[in-house]
Every structure is written in structure tokens, then in C-alpha cells.
Length: 448
Image 1: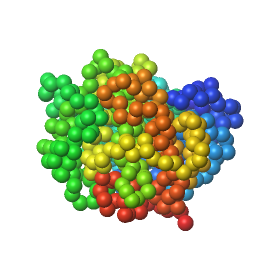
Image 2: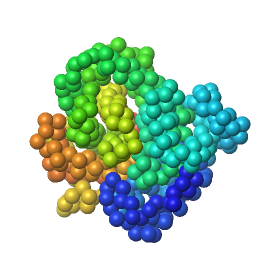
Image 3: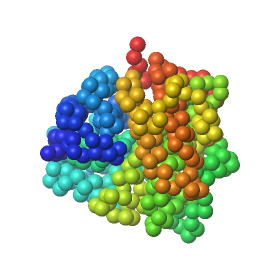
Image 4: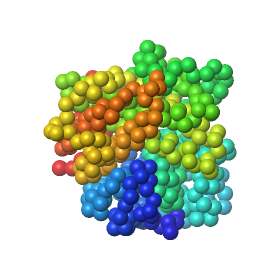
């Protein structure tokens, strides 16, 4: 049985994709994830860290990958990881005696092991659902602080939480909470201000989410206010550059609590549209935006909300609104690359002949020479496609047929294979100069 200290994936559990698995693959993914947990592996960034290993392995496993593909992925990821600092016994004791003392350690990567051990202990005592409610989704000041921090670093801690919930792994959920604790809170604090502005305005949402995404181009004050300095650091400047411009626009995202199912589908679809329709910038080879793909790979967490009876409805509603606002904010920060879904539909893949479906193409991503981003995007596209089918006649649908979904996935396959010797993504796709750059973030480790 899985615990907060032991990862054990049940082969009878199918995950969001619904695939059935054999015992050997379940054993392998459990073994590798346990090894990663015990090593406290992390990937350091300028703003903190996160761990791609769990995402990568569970995505390959959840899309039908075998033991060999799992081992290869783990071996590819290992050079990118580093062991964290040693835990501080006195800090753990302090956290255990009074969670309020956590405030002086929040936002500091040096205390990740302490937060991890704390949350492992809490999960073991109370169960992971209760701990998530108490420390992340509750209405206390402490929970709000952790919730704010979970949106930083492109919401990687929420992506970690998504995989933990999907596969019912308490240890991965403890990791997600610990990761949230060591990130900053500037994005979440800003989104809290947007939430207050939305609550003060009685008007309802008059446009669909894709329409708001498309019309943001005409809000020149908002768009231009973020075009300062290094585009890869632009979200740092939200509070400095555009609070007066961004808050009124983002507060227009409002969700009717009685219409959650369709609004979840709309958000997931819009994230896929935002990412896949922004890949063209002739004469350059099409590439997905490295920042926008994270909004797509996070989107499946929304599909877990409906069946989660342990989450209050008002909390589900809140997460969905924050996600929509977060998506548009990031789109503006990437200089609003023009969505060209018609170019996706007309794209000519390098394969001949083409496979018949996105599901059939999925296995091609299991051996990609990266840290799991490509296969995560591929999985998210398939999930978005499936969820969108029920709503093909709705005005918010932008990717209208299975053929276009398949083309979007072929763009992903072609770009990550053709440019795999370099960085297969563009960073800030609306910025012309970005297409001339390597795309590697500063200090990013590369392979020879």
C-alpha cells in the first residue's frame, strides 16, 4: 500500500488516460519513483526548484509505456537532478510544534527537506485529503499563503499535486506541498487581488475564455505594460508593471458555479488552443512555447476536480477561475503570439503515411530525449481532445475536428525530434527575437 514514505502504484489503477497496465511496468515505476523520493531529487531554477522525474515517469506509465521506457526516462532525467541540502532537525521540530512558525522558512529552497518531512508526517497521521484541505485549499491564512505560492514557477507544485492525486500517491502529494512551501508568492498574491476585484464587480462573464484570450490584443495598456526588460522574467514584474491594467481585464474571468463541468472542458480546451495555435512564426520551424505548455500540462488537474468529493464545490470553482486568469496573464507575458489554428490544420507532418489518431501517436513520445515535457504535452493534448468532443457545437470550441488535434500533436513530435540537439521550444513566442535565440534559460544544463 502507498504511504507518505512509500510509493506503490497499483496496476489496477488506470489514471486519467484509462489504460490498463501490466505488473512489471507498475513495479518498475514504483521502484524508480521510490528511488527518486529517497534521493530528494530536485531540478534547481532561478526561482526555486521542482522535480520533473515524477511527472515524466507517471506520464510515460500513464500512456502505456513499458519498463524499458521508464528506465530510459529515469536515466535521462538523472543528470538534471541534484540532491537537496540536508534537513534541519530543529526546523522540523519547530514546524511540528507550531505550523505558524513556518512563515520564516517559506520561500527558501534550503528548507525543502524539512517541509517534505513535515508533510509526510502530517499525511501519515491525517490522510492526504485532509492535509491538502488544511494546508492548501482551506480558508485559513496559512492555507492561502501556500495556495498563493503554488502558482509560482509555472505552477509546478500543482502539476506535482495533480500526479499525486491522479495516482493516489501520498508521498508525491507531500512533495507537492513541500515544493509549494519553498516558492515565492508574487503571482498568487497578484491573483488574490484579481479575485477581490472580480468579487466586487457584480457583472457576469460576457465572453468565452478563448474570446478573452483573443481579445486581449486590443487591451494595449495591459499588453504593453508587460513588455519591459527580459521577457523570460516578465512575470516578476506583474506587481511593478501592470497591476492597474491587468486586474480589470483578468477579473472578467468568472465562472458560474452551476456550470462547472462545461467550464472545466472550456478551460482545458483553451489551454490546448493557446499552446498549439501559437507554434508558427515563418520562416522558422514551428515550435511550442516553453512557458505556455505548462498551462496545458497543468490543465488535466481540472478533470480531477469533478469526481473529487472531498473538495468543497466553492474550492473547485475558485481553482477554475484562478487557472483561467493565470492562463491569460501568461499569454500576455509571452507577448500574445497570434493564434493560428488554421495553420495547424494545414500543417504537413514529416510522417508518411500518418497514423490514424492521437492515441496511436502517443508511444512515439516515450523515448524523447528530454526531461518529459514533450510526452506531458502529448498526453495533455489527448486528454483535451477527449474532453472537447462532447462540446463540438459550443462557441468556445477552436480545435474543431480530430484531424486538427492530430496535426497539433505532429507539430509537437516533429519539432521535438528535429531540434532535439538544441532546445526544442521557443521562449515567449510573440516576441520576434525569441525565434532567433536558442531558447535555453540562463544557466540551463545542456548535454553535449
